[in-house]
Image (cartoon, rainbow, N blue to C red):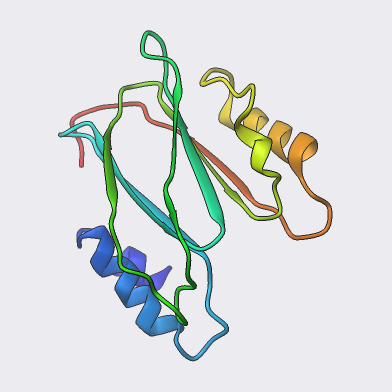
Length: 146
């Protein structure tokens, strides 16, 4: 977290590479980073390891877009890094889950409702029960900030 907080304005690939160097003496970690740019209304995301993600589109767009995961382990075996940049609109919702959540977590998700309730519902319905599980749900509100 110190690396991400100290250098948040750096490109996402640089941040992930710095995390990789910092985590070398450890067992490593799965890591997904997502950066919203309010001026461009984009989100840049990059995932290494077993953190799955999906963006749920708010009406009128609707639909969803899955995060492309890269095999590897930050701190141990870093793959070539290719971030994805997608357009976002106010009301779009980002959902990130660890491997303790079943792959079908995104079925029947909608971009409305409180984000805390959405996270609780995913945990209750899709936790494997054999591994630790974490769910993060974030709604993009838009705006001109970076």
